[in-house]
Length: 173
Image 1: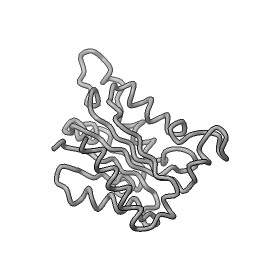
Image 2 (image 1 turned 120 degrees about the vertical axis):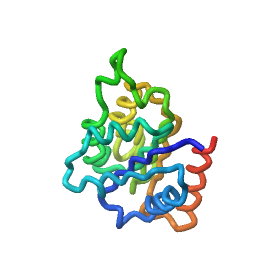
Image 3 (image 1 turned 30 degrees about the horizontal axis):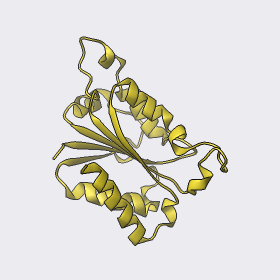
């Protein structure tokens, strides 16, 4: 099984049953390492050197977060700004993201139809998180899948489990 780092960023986890269900899954499986960056960095002071050293040890990455005001949570954006190193792109440096599988899981309280050109917000979720996807592409990561869970705050326990199973199936492909 691939050694997987889960970079999890949710500032209001206590209000998110859908995210908590997947966290429980990660914790129960030894090849997943869960990094809850809101828990680890409540003061927003990222230990960038330690994080860069840590990510070198993983074969696959999952970025899991809710859409917050039409983008990534602020601490996740800061984590990327601080941890991703332009030196990795230089010929004589090791790029720990190059060729690594990346999965992105986004939860949102909004309806799917709201996130379209014709919808309420006039942007897709993929467009709203493009800062992350562009960054990953620049560092030559292999984005395997972006899973979006709409109306996550309204899902029943059964629906949450179905989403979790679908995501686990994606990871096992």
